[in-house]
Amino acid sequence: MALFNQTKTVAQSPAAKYASARSNLLIAIAFTLANIILLVVDADLYFLFSAYLPYTLVLYMKVFCGMMPDEYYEGVEMEFLPESAFYVSLAIAAVILIVYFICWIFSNKNRYGFLIAALVLFAIDTVIMILNFDPSSFDIYTVIDVAFHAWVIYILVVGVMAGVSISKAPVTEVKAEFIPEAAAPEAPEAKLNGENADISEK
Image (cartoon, rainbow, N blue to C red):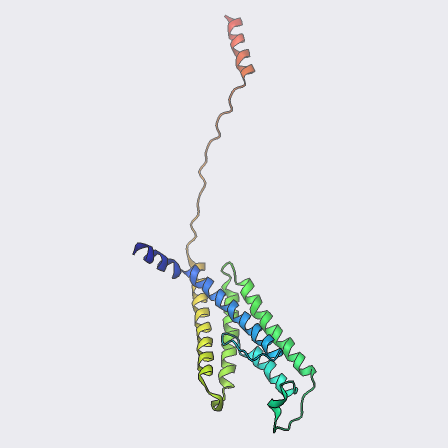
């Protein structure tokens, strides 16, 4: 029981909460990158634990540039954008992910200001997702996606609060005590010369 309580205390420590927030941020970045790559290669797979804006931007440009499978456009007449618009969207998505990644890298050593920046970016991402919500396409995956966004925001808020708590914690200074150096042993020759001098005086 004592071991369990100790483990629980460590898990709830500010340092553990801060590390957990950074880990969740990195996972979201990795899944977002994976989703974009899967979209580019036309793989029918999507990870929910990811940012909305970078992926959706690439998805829309892929649709409007006529780069989706042919069956997607059956019965639909539309004028496509130049293919370069798709690559511009990829570049913008890459910039967004790089900003997230910079926030993750520089948020180490309790530099929670970068974690705050990631929190603001992900909150904006969530607002855009909600504003772009289409009731006609509502399904269980939408609920799960919203739930994951809420979780990431929550864990980042907890991480920022933990970072503030760590920065306000008193720093214990350890003062080194002065330890006098041990007297150097007298050389045998010097000791012998001293004894001879005593004998001469006598």
